[in-house]
Image (cartoon, rainbow, N blue to C red; front, side, top):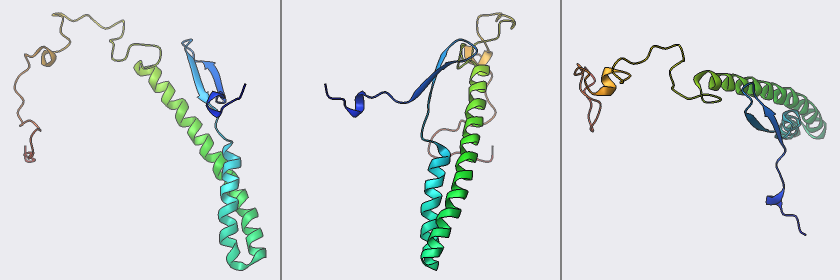
Length: 138
């Protein structure tokens, strides 16, 4: 009967990556509009030192600069997000087993991936980095 704020769905877009897994991205507020509003406020405050004409000019210039800054920030965030998703697919976080050996890797001879993980590795030459004081000379 009554709609509550918590019952509304967020503005989410559903897509599928190249492995067929569903990804959801939140479509937040428009970065250009947010930058324009912020620039307009700051420009108006700084321009008010010169009086009403300065405040108006500061608001106009601040809105223009804020719009450009918002678009640049949104573009950089999109590029970084795409790069992170590509790296996640490469290392196996998305659509794979993280840390798993590639299919063409030779099998382990004794069932242990390394001597150190089997507990037969040699003693290290340095002192372990534990306790309140460490020996930095080693």
